[in-house]
Image (tube, rainbow, N blue to C red; front, side):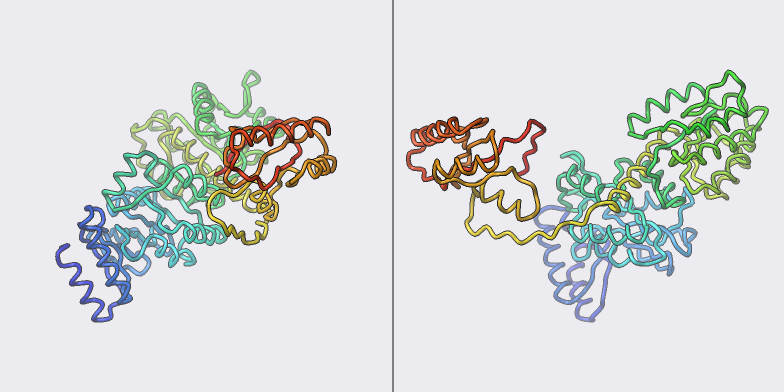
Length: 513
């Protein structure tokens, strides 16, 4: 119980125990008093070199060495020689996700609940596991990233080793952020910023639990994600329209098929049948069940296609097994991801069909929308990986020293940007009308004048900006007008000078600050 935790932690330190798991709640998630107790607990543990998982956690299970330090059901059947490292703050959600992944036949390596993270955090467990060759994929349910820089370094290590990182991070809304704080004491940051940064670093960020299960299932089978768009094959003409509509919603493109691919498929189709992407095989499967696999293979062989969504009407029970016999050899041989969909939601499928699919390790979907959403996610992941590989090395940026506090004049700020290799408009600071004329002659007209002083943060309000100066005569007049206007509005202000810059061409403007 919570009342005995502090004493127990002190006893562990005294006995030089290396680590402890604290299941008890009533700490930082329970208000000011609980936060004070957690701070005391953490201080005692750190001073004594005691690593703590928790408090307010479900513990962890090491499936590889069969070590269950949890009060939850450990499910020993999930043991395999390698598998997923599942890490998250919420014990309940770790249990849910572990069960969902197991139902998809995905083996577990570790399932770790970190709770309030008083001493150790998700980053510590990830650091310990990311280089383990038995870890094939990392799945995270994170309510707060406490050490973003370390987290990104660990993600990069996983990326280099070809290990996908799939993450769900609740907290898109203010109410969800408040819920996270009351649950594990986590303080969530700006969700949009977090998501953008992580996707740039090729983390697969998902918004829904079912998307997490679906993405993990595809990546467990095909860890090398596609960069090209998807093909769709179906036996329903109406579903083509459904697929085209939903593809725009999830941003999954369906490329046109290569002429050679169309020629192969046309040989199997009647003359009146159209061939395209999505591809409708119509009713040919009733008399030629091999068409399911043949058409799928033709689409997968197309060099312009990165993945396949094979979404079929299940039909009568006697039609289920012919589909699996035709499709499974093609899917298992494919290096491109395939989402095998038997539409119909809870419509029963025969035991023979289900057993064959489970034995093959092929992910089975009952919802084509879920399949397309998951394929869109792993395609974005593939493109993020590709962009990182093609990215130019980051330039070495010299350290910037801003000795004075407060606002920095524009001309000084731009000198720092230029030193860091960031382009700024051609120009320089002028302290006299003659210097302004020399600068304008060097950089070319039209130019702009901007008054410069640390105390002048809103130049336009006092007439401190004059644009589109086209020649030397206009420059003299603008110089005099600028100083006169500022003298009337801010007579006490001493300018550093006036920034003379070449006018930029019209375009989009981005303010960073």
